[in-house]
Image 1 (cartoon, rainbow, N blue to C red):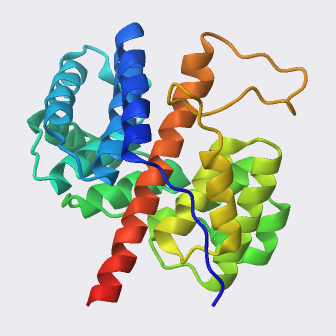
Image 2 (cartoon, helix red, strand yellow; image 1 turned 90 degrees about the horizontal axis):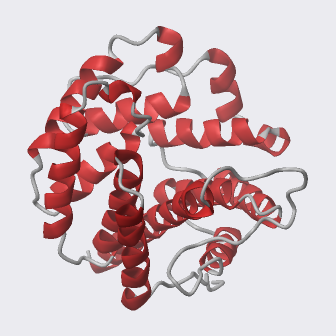
Length: 284
């Protein structure tokens, strides 16, 4: 049997990235940065089974701020990150009343969306995760067109970047195990995108593999490439040498390094959970 090599992240490295994310939240106060920072730190801390007490208190504070904001629906927050934070904290036995209320509002709001909106991949993921959290909500079915695409892995090679991201979302929403063919194709596509330094999309595709499939050599190579994007201060990413004629607005820590570091942290958490499932299966 061929040995699969995977990237590793030490506890020290995880804590360095945690410090980086915490410092960003301090330097750039605000709910959008604060919640991204909180999510990334929860991923890293939970991956190493460390205490989430301080993060639970921070989640309560941020959640309270969102609830009390007069225009909370215009803050530009990512509902999926809030749902994931709540899930990680609950998994560690930490109940956060403010997050529970936010999720209740999300579930109520989701039901009022149009049928077309509810068929969008990311919205279906949100619905599926809310249902998994105990809310009486059901993810909408896929449109006929996207269903044909998701069910035809051979067509994924010709997909646009937006379509690949949408496919990953629908796969996550459905939650069905990936077969060997789908796993291999997603992994090859991840490597292709990483070669063009589209690291965020590469992270998303590899995360889908570790969450729903059994990683292959190609997905492990992609994981190793992503791990090599680590910087000394704990952030992830380098300037994209392949991008031409584009400019980055605002501080690069917010527009480039924060979202990428958060995405990498999410990937490492899913990888850790996959590793734990494999260990549990072996010991049964």
